Length: 244
Image (cartoon, rainbow, N blue to C red; front, side, top):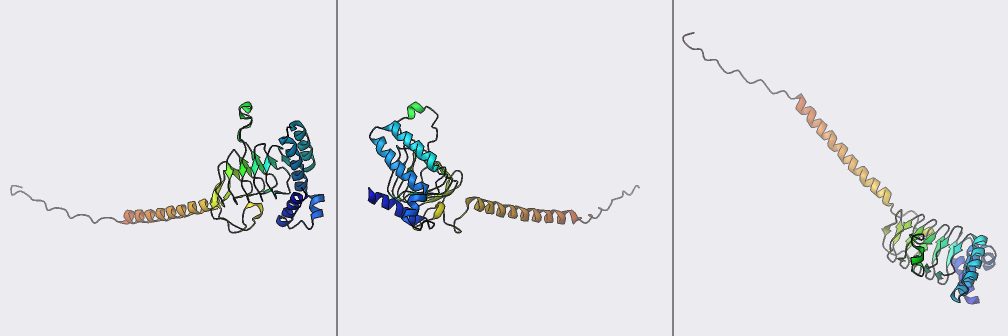
């Protein structure tokens, strides 16, 4: 048990340069409190004390601003940086060495539609090992975000993300497929990530410039044609009859 706690603390220190010591993490990090609270409530949940588990989970939400359902499955060395507003649903599954930032939701797509029919079914996403999810991102639905994927801040993810890919936007689109072994804070590398919106605007700008050039050429041709007056054709000689 103490080994697991030490691993959790050391993982937070490794991923947050603001953490200076283990005691600082234990005393002042709401993510540590929320995760330790989850470990306890999950233990109760698995043993059938579900109302008790939900009650203590609610207390942890009041204390930390982080809502983790006791029925969720969370691996080792899990880290939530800042943490306020994070929501992790009942059937969410999280692997080892996963990092979430504030405001992240691991939710279902239609929780209020036929709620009775959804009980006991997989409704929330699965995050495999090494995934990083930026602040404000929404991952909605029972699909898988594969190993070492990166989810950009405020992205809305509605479909499976391949291993090592980086996705951004609403809805989220893949902007990089190759794996990045570096730890990328907030889920995206800074400065070298292509912006799909900017790329689309650049393409549109090039098309507009091409159309403008074509319009100029057509106007020039039209002016040349309007300025050209064909020479008058010589009048045919008139044949006069002898009787005239």
